[in-house]
Image 1 (tube, rainbow, N blue to C red):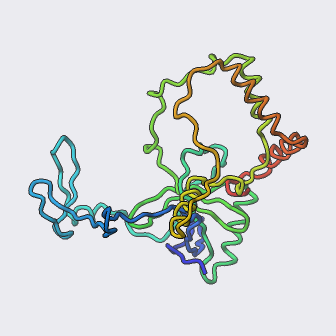
Image 2 (image 1 turned 60 degrees about the vertical axis):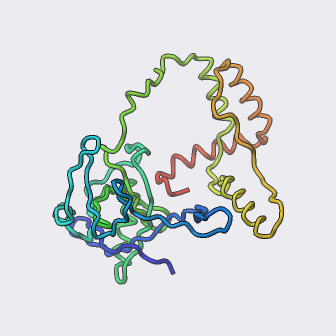
Image 3 (image 1 turned 90 degrees about the vertical axis):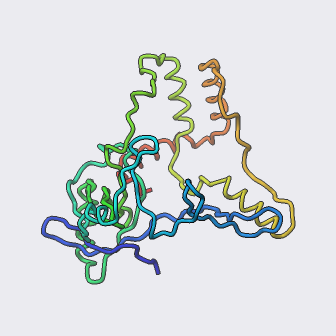
Length: 285
C-alpha cells in the first residue's frame, strides 16, 4: 500500500476535502558510495571549521547570510523559527485558471492526492468539477515548514498536485540575446514544418528510456558476475555543432525522417492533433 507523505485538506469555498499526499514519481537514480581506492573502506564526511580544521558538532552550527565576501549576518534558531509560515494543513484554492494560460516553465514536481477516510464523496465531487470545467486550481499550502505554490488538476481518476515555481524564481530571458522571428526565411520555415510533421505522432511515454542509467546498470551487473557488459543505444554526438548550411541540413533531416517513417505516419499525425484538442491535462496521456 502506498505511504502518504503529508495529510491535510483541500479548502474549496465552504467545502473541505480531507486528503493524503503521495509521491507520483520514483526517481531511478543509481546511487554510489564513496570508497577508498585499494581497500574499499567507506569514506565519511565531517563538518569542520575552515579557520582551524576542527570538527564542529551540529548544535554549535548557526546559519549566516553572506552579504559581502566573508561578511555574514547570523540568524539564530529562534529568529528563524519566528519567520516560519503559520502551520496549516489546508491546500487553499486561490483561483481557477485555464491550463493553457500557464507557461510549462512554472511546473515542477507532481504528487498524487488521495481521499482520506470518509472523504471519498467530497473528493469525487471536486475531481469531477475540475474535470468538467476544464480548469486547474491554483493553490498554496505548507509542507515541511515551507510555503508552496501548486496546481490542482485531474489525471484519470486521481487529483494531482503539481508544485509550481513562484514568478520571482524565474530568470529573465533578456540577457540571452535571442534571435527575432524576422530572421526566419519562408523557405527555412517551410522545410522545418515539413520536418516537424514527418516526426509528429502520438505520445508514447514508454518509448523513451534513460539509456545512460540502463547501460550503467548493465556495467554494474556484469562486474558483479565478472563478465563484460553489452551496452546498447547510440553514442553521444559532438558536444557543439558547427555552423552549417541550414537549408541543406533541413533537407537531409527531412529525407532521413521520411525514409524512417511508416506509410501510416499521416494518420498518426492526425490522431495526435485530435488528442491534443481533447486532453487538456498534462497528465492525461
